[in-house]
Image (tube, rainbow, N blue to C red):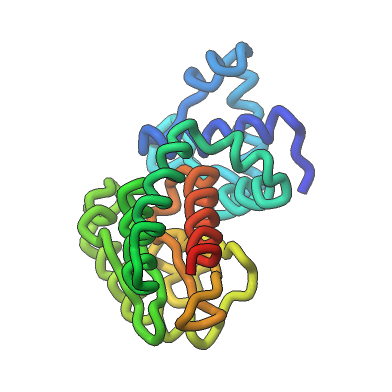
Length: 240
């Protein structure tokens, strides 16, 4: 995909700003950020839109990322691990401490896994999940549904259907990478639910293919979430 450095930075700025404000990002905001004219930004946005990386919802003048835009962003972070830390924020120090307290203070493996999931819910605002043997532990469903994306009942039902099928899918598919990210339509059991699943595989007393992660709207701080989920998986593997 042919994309200039400035177009890449504009795309990343749209993704990161949209994660914060949950509203389309306009050319005026970006023009101030990049110290160029709004016309220049609009031309660059038109190119990104032609590549299918951003879109214009309704009649708004702003743009939001597409699943393809998020995938490009996440792939860039995955290929450059140092960028994950850069795109994450300073609260990761607190996140690491929260995980350590919730995991290391437990004498039972299942309690440690539940503690790690509860920490991810607190730190990301998403739904947290983990496999404990043949069971799927879920926490934070109410937190997930307070996100602005889920005011529509149809989207809530789509997520509920995905959750109903998540445990058997994890058991059968057994995603092999240490960190697995499924964005929007990439979710094989919930392609219309418009959510992203970020999961880490880890070894536990229950299985060599145990999983922990979060499920949230496609609009989220991927750098931060990827770091936290990966850290939770590594910490559990080291502790258990």
